[in-house]
Length: 322
Image 1 (spheres, rainbow, N blue to C red):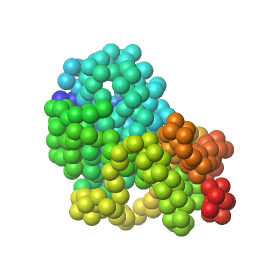
Image 2 (tube, rainbow, N blue to C red; image 1 turned 90 degrees about the horizontal axis):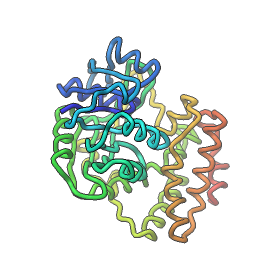
Image 3 (cartoon, one colour; image 1 turned 90 degrees about the vertical axis):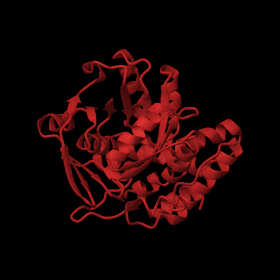
Image 4 (cartoon, helix red, strand yellow; image 1 turned 30 degrees about the vertical axis):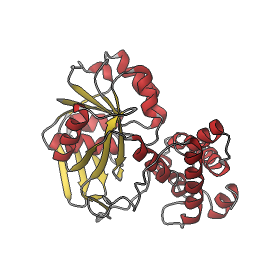
């Protein structure tokens, strides 16, 4: 079995390094300085428990891979890049190989299923950051991450168990499940606070605003008849398998949205987080003004290359009607 990781950023970098170091054959699809580092020195994974370095093959595009029938593809690009990534995979000859959407949000699996028959969801609980081309940082211990894994729209097969076993060898707890999407919707609720941290800055009190966004999100999911499983502190695996701790000498930037603003990426995934709640609200005839505002604000911040902490708590609270 060979694992193709499409998008060697924060999450993809952790996965590629940890899997390769544990003996799995890995090919990473990356670009720019990240690809150069993969080819020249490999990647280093820094965690609270130490540092791991691994070498693996790196390419710039799926067309550079001679895909095999037993390849497994982990899609780790941001949701706004999923359509292009899937089109590249199809053009490169991918057909029936399992594609695992190891991404935030709940829209990627449907996008993948439009083009491919063998789609799986992964709920990713893995706090990670990508700063330097040759390094990835993960803040989880004793496990680096906890993943729920299953077919989309439902079921569980040998590929899910194979990925879980490979992840377990790499110190990432994998849990195959027949119904992966409820946990992904639970993670969606958690991610509604990403833009709050990004807009206000890490260390600012975001509790009241985040609580309002998540309460509205739950109301919308309930109105849509969508089941969700809480994966926050109520999940018993937190505190046993996954604790988020600081690493000496590393100051955390924060969520993936904070990292996008910090890098000046010009794009942000909020349309697939808070924007997902806004979409469901419109489809089911219920209001979602707070998450609608949050998605619009995120787009403006990304477009203007604003830095994390560019918005005051008072202005955000006013924008969502608090």
